[in-house]
Length: 295
Image 1: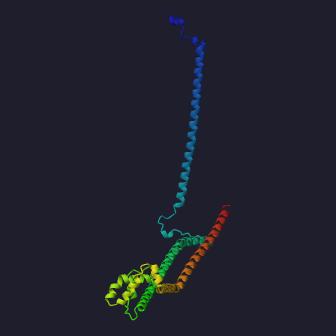
Image 2: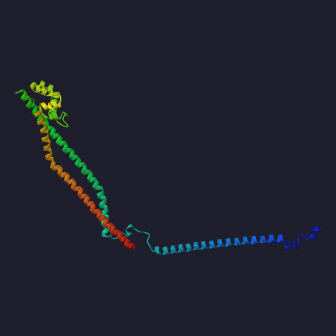
């Protein structure tokens, strides 16, 4: 009864209450603002979905159209295709293209052959040089041993006229291995004194062995060469003469080999240079033609 009398729920209490009125206005404003934002978001989503759907529909339509066209075009084709039915390319190449390809192949071939040829030529020339040096040394040693034996016999006859001299083979001394680099009269005397003295003396060549002992007593090579200068010089001249003779005999062959190698190298270099020049010219012309086509 008291509450009814106070009219707490009467509309007039809210309408004329300024605070409640303000609160209601704020609430209505915020609510309307939120509804407006929600409506905008819904519109944007609908618009995006509509655009995406239109794109998908266009793709599907285009795909169906392409499939129909392909089906119409390839339907009359035969499935049993043989390898002989495949057409071959009969494109004609220009002379510049053919020449450029030829230069490429030649360049690769020459790039592989030229170093190999130089390597083989170098090996051959080195082998020939070693052969010539060995022949010169062999001829000099052989002639020096012959002359050394002759001078020893001459000295023995001079020292003991009518003395019995042995017959010593040159091959016997060569095969001993003591004369591989050089030979001299001093070396010959010492070799016979050290390695053949006892054998020769037992065979009855005592006077010859005495002459050898007399010469071998000079232990110093300087003293020996001064004492027996004539015999030493004769052996030295014989060695030098034999070496010069071999050099003179082999010089034309060496000169011809050297000339051949030089001519081969020069010809290879000239061929390579000509090919490089041709390749550069053709490459420039082709590049120029491509630029014109692009323009």
